[in-house]
Image 1 (cartoon, rainbow, N blue to C red):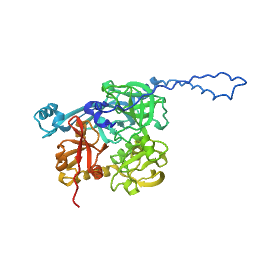
Image 2: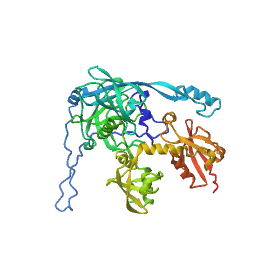
Image 3: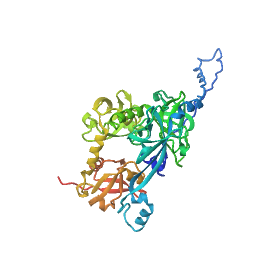
Image 4: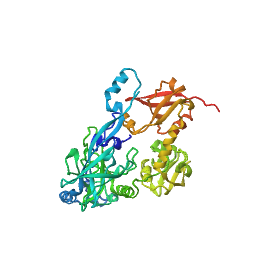
Length: 500
């Protein structure tokens, strides 16, 4: 299920709200209880009894609950409230939903003749001071579209903050206020966290400044089915809109994460929350302070999960790894020799268990780094090396490729496609897909319309024109999954043979 923290937790919607479409399967953060004691006892065996069974498990030692009041008293002063204001451009339908209703009532195609309008943006979130001279960490989505950012300290002083930089991929932003000798937090090691360990959050849920909530770590290194490459810390700490960007403390009073997302069908806390590990935030902070932006590496592959059926098909001993579904042309993956159908099982000696493990490791590497890949191909393991590219440069190149089919008459499907803009994705409630800009030939005969969004070809999600071309080249007929307004439907289409 795709997740969209950036779109659903932006300032316009105040803090950390994450609302999913009704058709989506909910999965953002799971909870776990405190580890308990496994009680067991065994009767002494009789003399003529067979060999004794395994001894009962030893009881788990009791662990004292941390003194959360001391943590809040000592480090709560370093937690700040952030309010933002600004404006953004949205479609006319987003600004006035009734326009879209009347347009469809009049029989016009969805989104026809829409213009862009400026709308005000206001929001709130949290942050925390990491340097006494005014360096503050928060979430990128808290300050997105903001023209003014105000930071309020616990002593009620307010400062206008400068956004030094924001990284959407990790959802980290770095702010600077003109102040000295400020209280700071102490940073810890998120890799030392254990499931069931006590943690504490401080933030401004619903504007209630410096609110403290506590819970346990539900899981670590949690990869989410989204564009995010962050291995999240999953907790059951009560987190609500306004907690975005606030710190997550361990029982020793060290910040181990930044609260960033919740799963909610109501907009409020439902026992599921995610935090970004603080070591990732530190890495992004250092890059932003040095260069103004964060650089992420990219391999250039689209991967999918390996289930038991696929594992059997590829003769794998267990359903683990990242199955390569697509290799971007001229990418580091293509140059390394990766092929669709390869299963990546290790990267630099680290096991790839779930498909999301791969992008999480790659995105945290630096462009230009060389990685070793253990790949399963044709029933045996092989080793490959890939020199990673710059994600931003590769995305710019991929965006240029979207204009490769300007005329629908040039393609086998009769489609002119382009990338969806962020506001178009938000309006449609989707994370990936291509906008159908024009139709001709087979597409027109099948009833496709400009404004439809192409989501998948033959049940395989598509996000680039090249993916559509590759799928269309495999068969004389394809099934296209499209979204029209709020409805989804499959459209069968016979491809058109090209001369030469």
